[in-house]
Length: 253
Ligand code: 13P
Image (cartoon, rainbow, N blue to C red; front, side, top):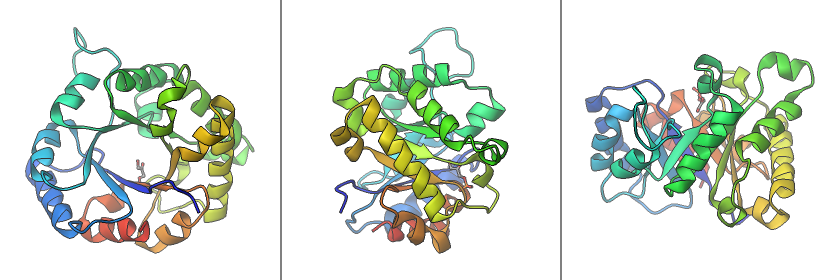
């Protein structure tokens, strides 16, 4: 049995006004009041972070950013930095999400800079990796995923490595209703853990949580989460209501 505590994180993406986000946070706080094995985090849009933090006060639900710029401050119009995420109460931040990589042009190199910016300020990165459909069909899944992993974690200090969170999100499964089968996902998660063992060491790799993301919902969560190397979920669409998100958290224990 793994000692890794499951993490279920809701990525709200570009959804919800402050009022809607706060209402969902309150609803989650009420429904998740009892102590549980799984850890829970939510990632609202930047404009809702402060209000959601306030709504979650007194609950164990953690707050996450959806992205971060790698400089702390300065002439970077439109960006948000790691110290500002700390200021508003974030303990996690997603980096390298496929929408960032494929819609906004984030590269492995600047994903790595974001990871280091978070580390410098004590925010835990949730580093996303994942292949596109044509890469999977060309048999390149592991090359792509393990390459993104190694570059995203370049120069990561091993003393802090056990805390990092990896999210495997096959791009073709995001928002499509198409999920990787539990065994296909497990195969990639196992390979990720193997590469983490090479980057760090086996003991460290065994402590790092690897989440699965891509059309996770109540009906498939249990099968995915029962795989040996799947330590939780990064949930998009199904995290937007308590009715669809809470059962996923319950499936994680
Ligand atoms: P969906 O759960 O909507 O497929 O989104 C997954 C995702 O991208 C989470 O970061």
